[in-house]
Length: 266
Figure 1 (cartoon, rainbow, N blue to C red):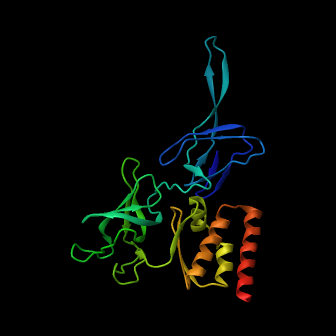
Figure 2 (cartoon, helix red, strand yellow; figure 1 turned 180 degrees about the vertical axis):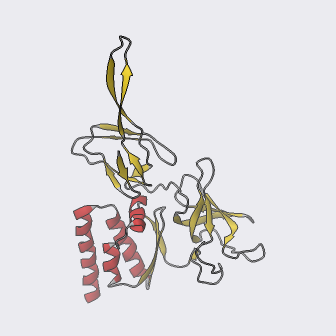
Figure 3 (cartoon, rainbow, N blue to C red; figure 1 turned 90 degrees about the horizontal axis):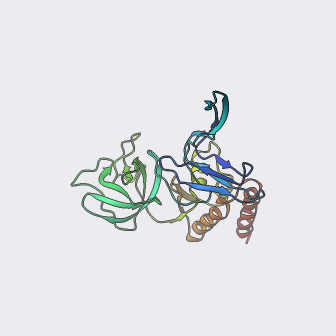
């Protein structure tokens, strides 16, 4: 058995022309196929076991035994590497866009198959008389409270680790004011959030620019720079680099930083 961790890239390029990945909860069915020179990449969305091989002994009608190789079902959720479709998981931090509201709930777009629900009381210290009144189009940074394959995802802006009120201006989960938001690949954002190392691109951009940034497991990235030009540059740089891997990504980061360095010298 092979263990894979959430965010790890899975490469099936050397395992034949066609491999079926059986779906589990929050997963998708797909076929990996193509020429031998064509690289097929997917990313695990949670830790699990992949491509377990087992052998079992079966008795034939004539009494002789024979061994039969059996490939077990894939036990991890997967999605195409550059996919922007998000499969909600409990406790993921996400960025959403409020699409509609009523006195009890906001409907929020988090790049999932259906809109998620955010109860109007799911804010730190909120009451029926003192709660947010967000308008359609508002960006909210929140966490997935519950994710059930048979119902809509449930969101929350309550942080169990702090007690700062929603209207204090210091709450961890809140609405995001100003700046711009962009959809990048879910895999890139997940790797960015789970990595123990800093993102090389962001580290180098940070030496030239000052900006705030918020990344969601659902592929949405919010950036607010000191100017619109700075904000747009950071988002464009992230878009250029997010779909690349290995040496290609390193080379593109050098190109992006080179352009930024040149612009600052003018």
